[in-house]
Amino acid sequence: MKIEFSKAEYRTLLELLYLAEWMLTAHDDAPDPAKERHYLLCQKIYASAKAMGCDALIENSKELRAFVPSAKLEEMDSLRDAIDAYNAETFWEELIERLIERDMNALLPTLTKEPSTPEEYWTLASPIEERYSTEFSTNGVRRLTIDGT
Image 1: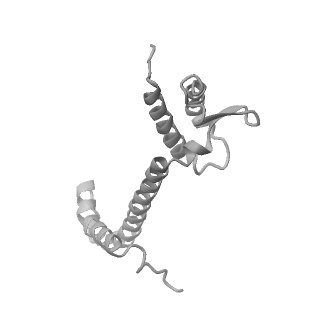
Image 2: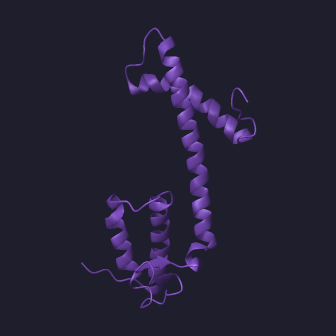
Image 3: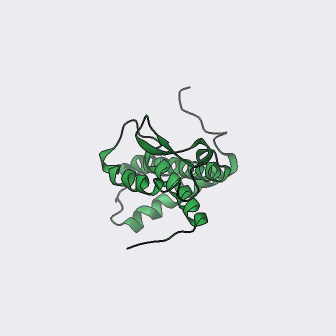
């Protein structure tokens, strides 16, 4: 199969690859062999940057012996905004999910009958989720405290 891209489409593809690669590796301390196939595909696509007029966005690092996003690509406002929005949404979703899990783990032993279906579980968990969603959308972390401090 052969896919042809215009220069504008290729630039957009580089932006998407940067975001995908960032999401996959932003918190990695060491290379992850499970992500090697992603890395190799990015390298294959990055290798065409110069031919596609995007050499300002991808650099050939002699030190790493690899193609890497340039500072110009990494500092693009649209990409930084996308990452910031992703991080913010993920933070709130993850915080609420963990608080629901904590509260449900405390609640379940007190019930005479534990929920036997996901629907029964979420009937109990939904008001907890709503309470946290409302609190955080209204107040952010302003009223969040840790007991004993």
